[in-house]
Image (cartoon, rainbow, N blue to C red; front, side):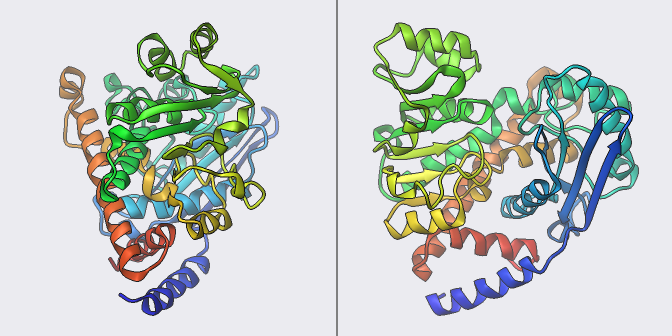
Length: 402
């Protein structure tokens, strides 16, 4: 495909996608208990012939400023991500406007789950169920499954509940690390010679540190407010420091960092380091037109949802910086959720062998590697940036035209 044909086709796909409206928007409020939340199913066209039928899936985000507008954006992006991953679920998200650490949250969360239950797939609705996202805690799975008397209402469960131990295994972070490894290998660079910077060492960033080092990459910078800022790692990233970061023991990690030869600077300094790969794994829109000129990494692999604005992605690409967008790099959570919903591995076997976990990890590795290769090949063929090549592939799958 030449560039003109690519641009015409992409414009047509974008027009069709932008004209789409959410298939379901549900607002839940219980004024007496102070419950406010939403479910948005954006599109299920890509999975109409899948084993679950037209079902949308995505995690449950919880914070004090949550809004329907944010949830729409997340569900829209999840549609691209799930389609890109080639899984049998469309794009959806749920969310609560609440502080998960506040008094009485458990009761509000349980009430939210109960009120949302009629739209769950297992109850005949179009939404695949609750899951982990920003603001989530392992207790939420227990509360939800207990309240609804079902383990199919929540994905990312521990193995003893039939799940894939999504957070413990860091399956989304595995995919992001595989995306970086594949990009490096496809451009003739060895992962073992690559330096990386990781912004945010919560569930995503911690898993990226784990799997990137397993692939041979060198963690040079990590940053998170919970470890006191941005740290330049002056030793090998291993031993007790790596264990503390990977297990998200922030107090222990900070102690290790402060007691070592490592150098602490301002939190946002992680974004401007001259490394081979920058992994923004914190929140959305941390790289924008206001700071994109300061990005010095050779590549940006998005771990968080939408950490770069589209304008920033285009500006980075124009400077020769490779950007692997989130919908290509981080579908691991969606894949793990899908595996939980459709795997034929019994709960008993999974408890004994963690076979369902292995299935989700293998699916993630293969899917992400294949998608990065396909997007890079299309970008080279059409002479365009990797983000738009990835969008093209995702749009094709959204509309079932791949």
